[in-house]
Length: 371
Ligand SMILES: *Cc1c(COP(=O)(O)O)cnc(C)c1O
Picture 1 (cartoon, rainbow, N blue to C red):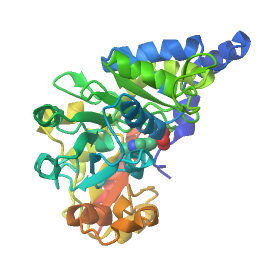
Picture 2: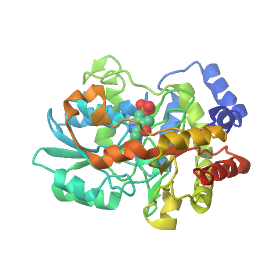
Picture 3: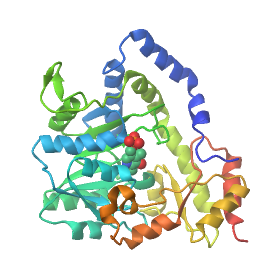
Picture 4: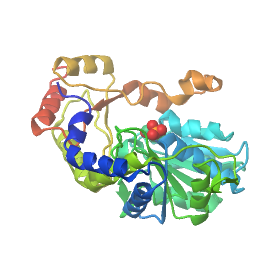
């Protein structure tokens, strides 16, 4: 069976270093907000090319707390509008509503599935304050244009980089484009902890300071609380393991690109549409391929066919946020591009630990579909 993502193989390959990192933390006696978190924050800020990185408990909190910090700083207030792609993972939208802000859903580009610039521009009103750009599946949104549009309208840009560690364009990585960027280190992400973890990157020292307080009960100094903060800390054990895993990230991304390149070169079946890369072959090198998302009008048959050939496939995502019970007020919204994407997408296995034989097995199974 070719599994979708074999985390056990991926992490046991690094078991010696991970065990050593954990042993160091155990022996140190310091388990929260200590030297391992500080070291990882510095390493990840430097990796992304930002001045600051603030570790938090998960990727959702990274987004929630950034918007919250902007409220505390007087940059946002209740009811302000945040433009967000309609076809994102629901966490991006939960972060907006959690803060009493108003999500304005926009249709994506039908080719890249990323933020559509024209739709974004059309959605701007006098109440718009933020563009939340999601780098879906590991491909950067068109950030040069997004940041130019935001500048022209005086808007903040928040990147959702949960799927895009190391993705870049023009040599600038995810995390360094917006006023701030939220990352997730959920185990299945390209840089994954062995539990929950997340972070915010930013060039803004004032924002970083507010975030450091918000994640820790709103306190800069022990027992002095400047904000009604939360407990959302990235613990020492996860930070120490993330430092180990960050050293392998670029190598693992190269493996993902190799798998994607083989799929793009060798899967040739008129019933299957391959993902489009902005910027062609060069663009494919900037993409970090968190997911390899194909499209087919015969998804159920395709998944059964792949399973019968020993290949696990998944759907990212089966139901768009505006059709979820959590947002029943949007039940009447019509977003045809988003709905078509959700009805047709299917993700092929992609990971740094797939063998060449497994990649070939996926290609052969795809090419045999319907013939
Ligand atoms: C995974 C993910 C998140 C949330 O990350 P968690 O660490 O699971 O909270 C947010 N946005 C996107 C696009 C994601 O894929």
